[in-house]
Length: 306
Image 1: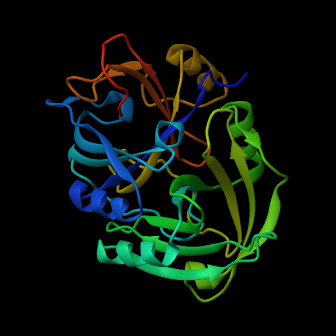
Image 2: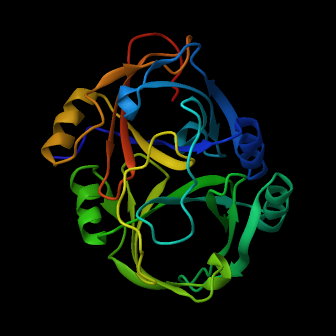
């Protein structure tokens, strides 16, 4: 039985300078909608940390609350550490895809806001529509794939898998997602990813019943990844967690544990701001070390954050 999570609510990306990163994502067409900054440090047990404090912006696309939120977060306690995932096959969260109605102008704005163009725009052979894509790095080096479309939308997150078939089963059976097609082998062009040669992968797109957002599971075949699965620390730079909204966090914890996953801590309460609702939260490593989360809003009045 899968979790009670109704839909994927947000993806979190850790940055070293919140204002700088927020300006970059505004250049991609996103909008700041809610600041979450608790006034005091609190226990970080849910994150696998001793004590935590942060400053963050929730950012939306043209999809508003119907779409995915980007939880752009700068850690204060502990300080940010590490480096983001690179454009290779290392297991875990790899990159976001954001669609844009004017790809050349968006690339120009992204570079002016401190981003780096890796490749593109390039038309790729991926079906009859032949999408046009580009790859940029945000100011901390987090990869963001841009897709020419008719609106700005946080469209996908890409997760690199050590074992695609096992990850597919986990995301369907435990997380309640549905595969949108059969697992497909494909070639990614070096014109988009940089490097010396094209990349051969297996991939599948998954969706839940309530999101306009999709999850792409990928296993690199050639070149094969040289790094093992590892669980990142919650304060490492780059994409760290993906959250489902749920009606029963404690019940989801039982499902997650029955599936063999071990949360960082039991279900607990977390403050995301003095005037915002307390949240019940649960964090645990997914099959590739990626942090997964369920969040349940408590009765304290306010607007949803984190």
